[in-house]
Amino acid sequence: DHIGLYDDVFTIQEGRMAYLVSRMRVVDEVNDYERYMAITFIDFLDALGRIADMKMLPTKEELAGAGFETIFDWHKSGAVTDSSIIVRRASSFPGIQSERALAEKVELLLEIIARAVYYDPKHSDSSYSIENCIKLLQKIDKSLGS
Image (cartoon, rainbow, N blue to C red; front, side):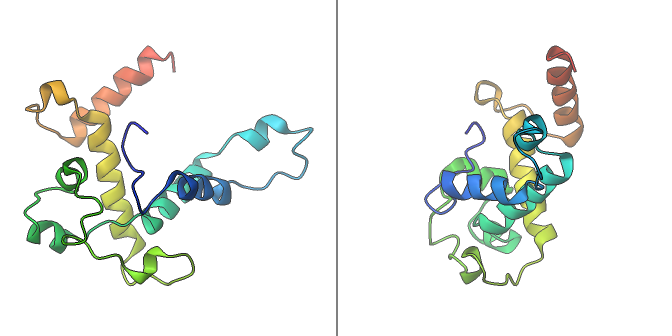
């Protein structure tokens, strides 16, 4: 878990559940094993939405009230389960309807992921931008031969 998404509230078990529930069904998993083991881009997007919905993410107001400029500052501070910053909402439990828009939660989750990919503790002074993050991802993609 390079990004550090797992914590006391969002566990590995919940991450696996998000992955498994997001996968499209395969009729014959024996003869179509490769398809059975892979996820599509749509499956991936579905899993991101499920993770954003399950993960306890603060609102932008809660972040500002706690003195954090960005969601990533909060994330890397270790205050993820600090109940003085964020109160566990009933909607973090399965089956309870959320009062927040999924788009808001996905945006916060994607910011954590993008900044975590870009973040280098040895060079923490380097400024983050989505353009720099995309360049880094393209460099990594090229080095992998894609």
